[in-house]
Length: 118
Image (cartoon, rainbow, N blue to C red; front, side, top):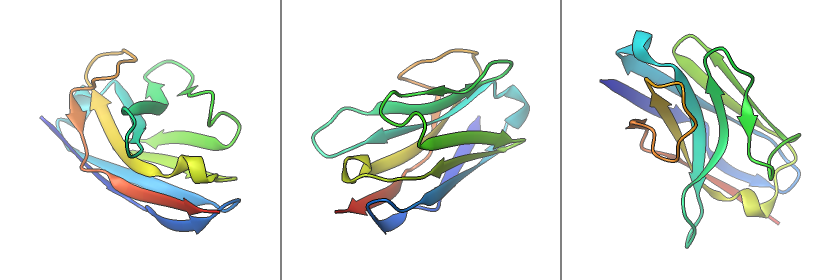
């Protein structure tokens, strides 16, 4: 079992930056994939950025060049720059024991709200 806890969300003006953090606990050694997903009101949850062990990070097209994902041991980070109002969403940290890009990772955090004002 893996537990995930996010932090770092908040309110920021368009063009600003935020850094999200996620700390994993439990069966950390089993994690092969970690990533960030987001869900805006009325929308489906979508992948934002994912790191699969042994591979380069993967990004959604809408955030590529603005967001940077990184992982240090049990911690996952998302540096978000040049934020836009359309980035407003609840951001979730996720983990999986498989080396796979999937919309349904096995473990999820509770989410952290990011709001970008215009």
